[in-house]
Image 1 (cartoon, rainbow, N blue to C red):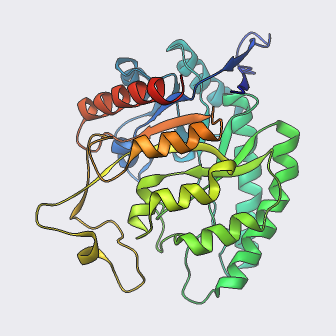
Image 2 (image 1 turned 180 degrees about the vertical axis):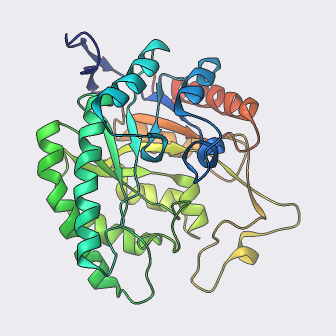
Length: 322
């Protein structure tokens, strides 16, 4: 089985590059979906530093960040965030970002590209070479036709690939539902649109897929079918699980567009106990020699469940990636 090397180099440290480590197994990161509003909302009640400190209780190798967690993109501030992460003995392998590349306003799309160039630089500064910077397609504006939207997204991402290559950062497009601060759901939420978009971008070293099986369920699609189509392009993964409320079926939750959305009858819970078949997911990833990061996106029912989810991932990684 081949391994992937991660360079742990942080400009905010002493200036000396840390060694490059090669891991034979996927590594686990933690993302505080439970605290998204508290840290990144319009009236924050928690800082990213408080989350970093609280994360010490979790068995994770890394901490995924969200660009909305940062109060500034100034080097001194970012270095203080990086130093706080390093103080826990971890790194930032993934930066969660939500660019809107389908905005009908060409100037807005340009601003989104320019902002993402900054975030690629942030990813390199905090995560080092090989870190993943998430990209999305954008919002599903009612007036934007499918082919027009795909064209805009491809155009924007292809502008970013040379920047990602320069910084040795990987762009990971997620099969997403909806950024919490967006008006409309994801343009490429449905599998057929997502696959068409991914296949339109030929770059494979600095662009790939951030796979999220729970988002496939929310889209009304089969997570395993999606994975079989994109397994050779997965560069990072979000792990969580969904549970149906008692007496509810998936068919009952489907909306007119075939998606489920964030129905109150589709609930969060401990990863590995819900609708996702993680044994098959990990078996497919192992067959494709996956050695990237798996980020637990959880905690909606408390940190105790996040700890249980992380323990589940540890067991399954040891079982399937030995």
